[in-house]
Image 1 (cartoon, one colour):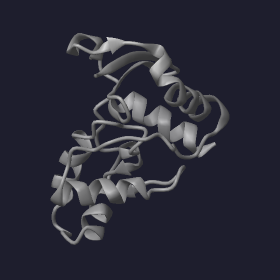
Image 2 (cartoon, rainbow, N blue to C red; image 1 turned 90 degrees about the vertical axis):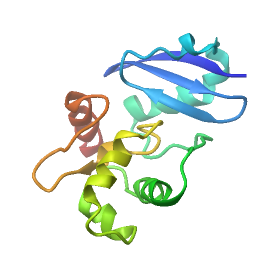
Image 3 (cartoon, helix red, strand yellow; image 1 turned 180 degrees about the vertical axis):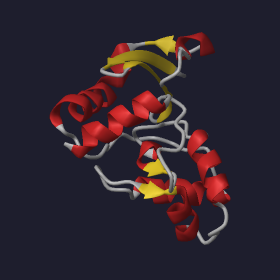
Image 4 (cartoon, rainbow, N blue to C red; image 1 turned 180 degrees about the horizontal axis):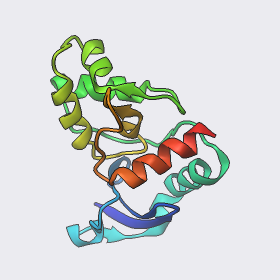
Length: 152
């Protein structure tokens, strides 16, 4: 069974999607997962909502939410490196590419960040380009907000 909820955050509505045990989707765009034959049920998201509230309002530095990523190979390695980025810190796409053993694959790292199904939990917003913020599926305003939130 799939469950959906729209969480109202300081950066706008965030759509959440989970199955019986794992968070599988977070969307900053206007995507509402309730349209995906998911049952809209806030109660199944209590732990996730609590941790999001703590992140946005109380300085939570990491998530202990149970989640599932659908990737293997290179993309899985990139996500494993992103998960290691500490709260309040940023690394470059090139840095991640080097860490996974493909130093010239910084564009592929950027593509992987753009395919992140659970931003915030897997902190792709902490990955930036050498010359600026880079991109973010939620938009650069949200990326800036998140980085500023974590810098305090």
